[in-house]
Length: 192
Image 1 (cartoon, helix red, strand yellow):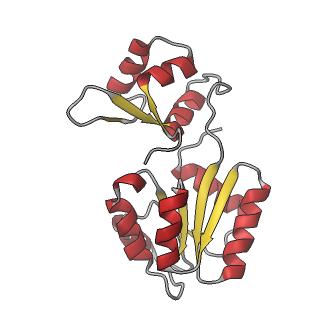
Image 2 (cartoon, helix red, strand yellow):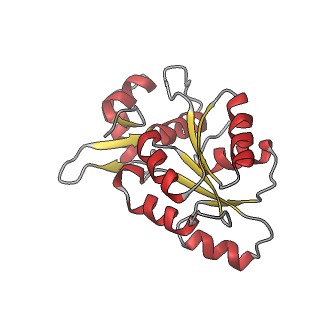
């Protein structure tokens, strides 16, 4: 199902960084560059978002890295809120967005759109944020997706409980676009 260049081989990383493949292997094996090994093989795979973080952290020029736009799916039963947030993200130029107004719509959209980040309203009607997060975490094609829950007035213990359920971050529902983008970039490990 991999129809995008979100996962790279060590050879591709070597070409992008203009180094020998063995250098990339050393970065991976030392833990500097995060990724995973193919089960039953010595082959390594590196997510493009991790490579971007690594390159920025080590002052490696990113001009050879064609990461494209960050795909963000917004799940909220309030169409005006979700479409407004989608438009605000699109206006920044680095984001491609899709919206869903129910748990069923979210499943259909996620399978086709394969988002990098999901923003989901915790208390929206017709949406079970916990079940959606659990599904994302258990779906092999969506393992790298970051899930940010939108919720207001949570206590520290409620926030911790949500993080233990698999959410990557909590963001106030009334957060402005700058705060939202900052949180998206934080969970996807984009460093400027």
